[in-house]
Image 1 (cartoon, rainbow, N blue to C red):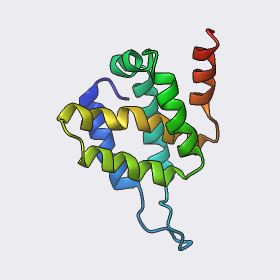
Image 2: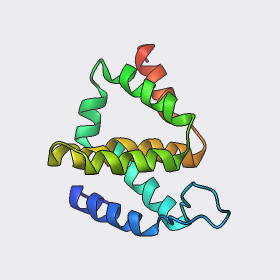
Image 3: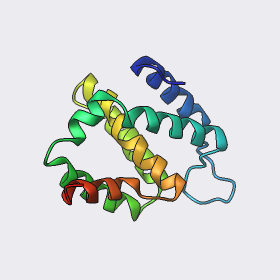
Image 4: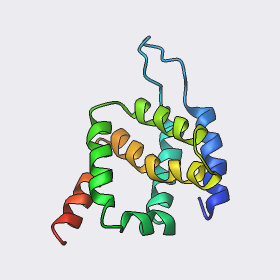
Length: 130
C-alpha cells in the first residue's frame, strides 16, 4: 500500500523492473504483466487522491489540457504513454516536474489498461458543472 510519495517512487522503480521490454509476440508494444498492472492500479489510486493531483486538476484550464492529451493518448497504446512518461521524467527541467510526471500519467495508463476512460467522464463532469 502506498502511503506517501517515497512509497510511490519506490513502487515506480518496481514497476520499471516488471514491465517487459521484449514482447513475445514480436510487436513493438511493452508487456505489462499482472504485477505491473497491479502496481499501476495502486499507483493510480494514490495519484488520484494526492494533493498535487487534486490541486492541479482543479485548475480551470486543466480540463482542456488533459482532454487533449487523453484524446491523443487513447488513440495510441499504453506502451506509448508509458514511454512518454519516462521521457518526461528524464527530460524534466526540475525534480518536481520529474516527480509529478508519473503522478499525472499513471492514471491515464491505468485507464487504458483497464479498458475504460474515466478521465473523459471526469472532464465531462467538470465542464458540465456536475
